Image 1 (cartoon, one colour):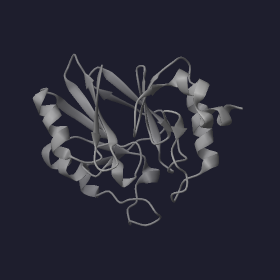
Image 2 (image 1 turned 120 degrees about the vertical axis):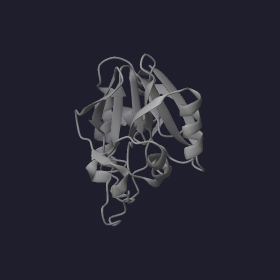
Image 3 (image 1 turned 90 degrees about the horizontal axis):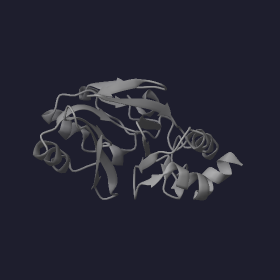
Image 4 (image 1 turned 90 degrees about the vertical axis):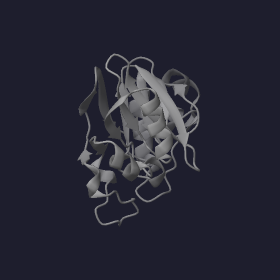
Length: 202
């Protein structure tokens, strides 16, 4: 398993390219901007895209989506609670032309020989998910290094995000944590030092 981090856009959203090194199939996680940067990496490394995963429906995590699906024919996954068909309710609208699929708790999606499992972790948004693959967690804006996602946007909830953080903290074993912004961390480090997780598990 190979994970490439591409900070993209004005908000430096972490777009991740998750690759099965055996088959060279890859998944694009949170294509927040700069479709050319994403495609250049895929093409220069001779990868075959298998899916696009969106951890939640805030614009900075999918702004490159429309350009990408013009170039690559792959399914796009988002939780239904973060998909707004009418552009209302404070969520950001995604085009239905994007081969959208709705994933939910415990869904498993194959990327070559890799299996990506969906964990529902709402609170930053109603449809926020964490994606688990082997020893990696792609947490979107639910969990950051030393912090968690804001909850003052429409659909956010401090109470609910604390429940999600508690759930992540209680996962068995240690994981590499790949958040939607800033640097990666480990789950064990966050269990020890993240003030929001410490509040969630007290």
